[in-house]
Image 1 (cartoon, rainbow, N blue to C red):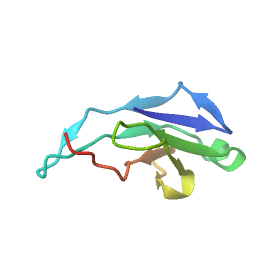
Image 2: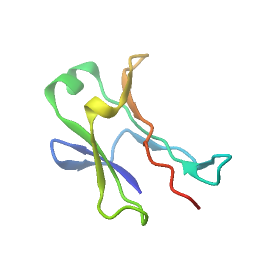
Image 3: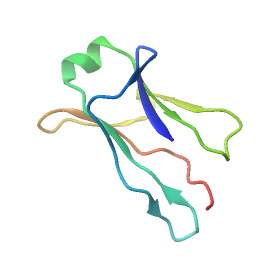
Length: 86
């Protein structure tokens, strides 16, 4: 499971969870997109939390570990750096 936090609180609005995609090595990847204005990105701290049975504890990624894009409208996109075996 992938979910977002804003200043430590769960975020449910403006979140897009994409489909699970297989990798050739038997692992998979998941993408979650949170749309955030440039102003909100400056004013708040965002983190992405990844829960998976292969992890001993939740993986919490600060926004410095995320890929940032600034199209219309600006959005923050995370590509989790874990690819658990299926």
